[in-house]
Length: 561
Image (cartoon, rainbow, N blue to C red; front, side):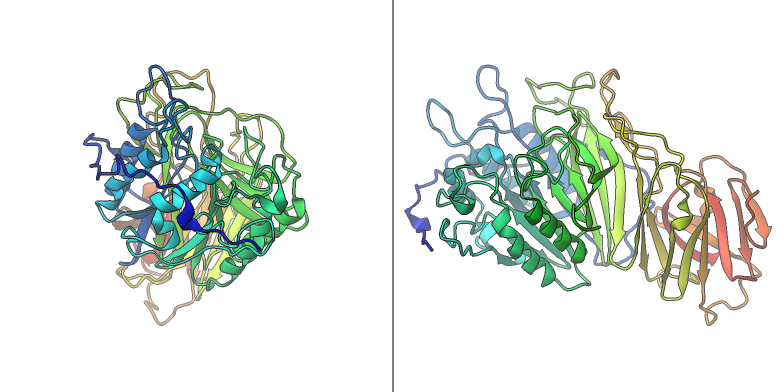
């Protein structure tokens, strides 16, 4: 095993690293009153962004091949959302250095994280293929010492670890601060670097880096399995599990490369309750379920929207292991993860790239940003996940938690949307639960129901205008939701009097049918029947259930009407 002296590396210039301020732009984000609210005082948020490459050469607006205008705009957003830290999944710059002056470009990206640091927000990057060299590996740990748990920009992140390699082809510490994990509150973040290591080596002595994730699978499994089951874990890397435009991936140049290591990795994520693997590289928003080839293990894959001058278009080359859920092309976006005890809600915001909608290579960054809430999905450690294909019934959704039961009694996934390649978009419906002590008169636990809304699908290059120009609709198919609570000690007389299925409306709770789009509010004293239309609601003393025919998802509870 070779050793490696980090101190022998070239001196990294600190020019340009003086503290930067926020952009000063008045950049708003737009969103409706939240159907999913925080239910505890300990809820918190973190942000995710992706590829920030910019063009170089004649006419380049942003410096050092880095999309500094977009970075500064996103910094504003992360500050407005109250994020505790931000993760970037690679491609911090387009090129590592100026080909004539040899000026290094990563220091510029580091400088534009100062606006986050100055406001007490952490920044934790991982490399992409545009900073894949050994020189860039060394720069990363100097410019971002927080990836090794060092320096003054940790802001509450703890327990930093990196793998120690045992092969004779790489120094044991050559992934220090490149592949790493850290804990923040009740979340474990694992970031995987698959590029040339700081000693210039690659897995098994290979000339190229494409197989560099193979000898990291065991370490990833060890840190995930050591995470307690009441804590969340997310895994981040630059390259996708299954890309849409780019087919090189975390485990090689092709989808079939290193299949054994790939499946071991997916099995580990599945067995350790990792719900989302988050990546960049493909310059589009794409949410899907990816499965292993040897077992029914699966994980949600989030491919992050572009923060760059370029945008990619999907192309065919799928090995059948992926189920697409959402897709939005040709926009600039970011992600907010809200962690509230066992529950996590992910919001995707995006803005136009500033030109007529479509696949473009920007020569100048947008002069204005208007971020719209385009997608919301989530899960809970105490809930369940249900995959509902187009044309399939929602009645498979059935869950119980501490004497509260939820059932969908009717409704079909009638959404006919596809991705650009024509693949039908399935729905992933998740349940989650939280205490209802803060809800006046509540007679059940609070149910969170994610994934019922119509699938996000924006890809048609024939569209015109500055898109997106609005929040995505949260309407769902019409369905009947029923909740039952076996809590006779609370409000024993109310079932036959005034209990209803209530839904969260911002900070308030209202009858669930009041949040419908359309329909007529009609009360029925008795059980649900198939003939009941949108807006009908009732209470069934015989079964102890309340029910409502609705067309929205969100948070629900049994309470007085």
